[in-house]
Image (cartoon, rainbow, N blue to C red; front, side, top):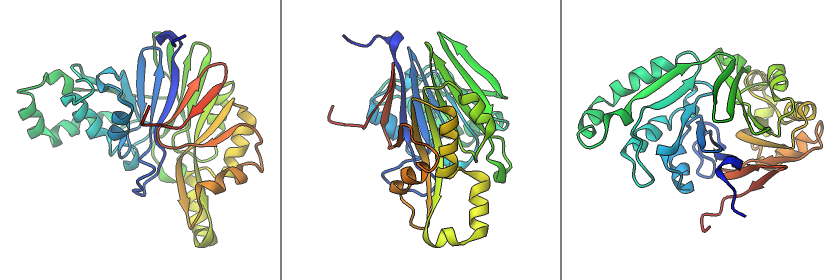
Amino acid sequence: MAESFQDLFRVTLLGTGAPPPVLNRFGPSTLVEAGREKFIFDAGRGAMQRLHQLRVPFADITGLLLTHHHSDHVVGFADLWLTGWIGRPWGRRKVPLKVWGPEGTRQMMHHLPLAFAVDLRVRSRSYPSEGAELAAEEIKEGVVYTQNGVTITAFEVDHGGEELPAFGYRIDYQGRSAVLSGDTTFNENLIRHAQGTDLIVHEVTATAGSAAESPEQLRRIGSNHTTPEQAGEVFARVKPKLAVYNHLLLFGGATADDLIPATRKNYSGPLLVGEDLMRLDMGANVEAQRFNEAK
């Protein structure tokens, strides 16, 4: 029997990478579909290309939510915004794009149209100008969206060494929930907000070789990001149906294959290392599927 729109709750990892420009892991970005609502969380490098691979019409996107303003989380935004307005080939946005994010989001959304003023002026002759408008809302911890059975709650996380506001998000729909950590070190507030969740998608960093031999490097990374051992403690306390790593930040020869063994020191439950375009279907269980473009 075909799945109805009302039953649909899906998290798709558009990009699972970090700042280094590698081809198998694009920049951090996540698509969440709940009923007829579609949200994008962060817009890293290549987000539009990944959305295109999924054949998701950008005109159908309810809005975009930012965890923080580091460049690797926003450099793909202009592409999503403007290519989604032009609308080739998967639909054209004809209404303003809603954007939620931390302090500074309004400033960013004010200045982007200035930077692209020539493009907007010329293309507005052919496309509805409303589709190029940006409707920005700056958020604090708490519920930031509730409509059509979908509730999105923002919670503060600790990207501490960087001294910038940063949020994670919890999405609740029809008794199921998913939590996206954003960039954070080990964080008690995340653990509190993730209690009872079905799925947690969490960032991770790992070091090996020369990078692991520098105490200064380890202190810097540890103040901004979460090691597999720390993430294992998070997962053990949250007890999700599935934990998935994204935003893989690997140094000194560390690889994705190192992450699960290190996590197992503190957590023995269901765990996957995320891949670009991995689909996580939220039902009685959380089912993961790798992307198959031939389908």
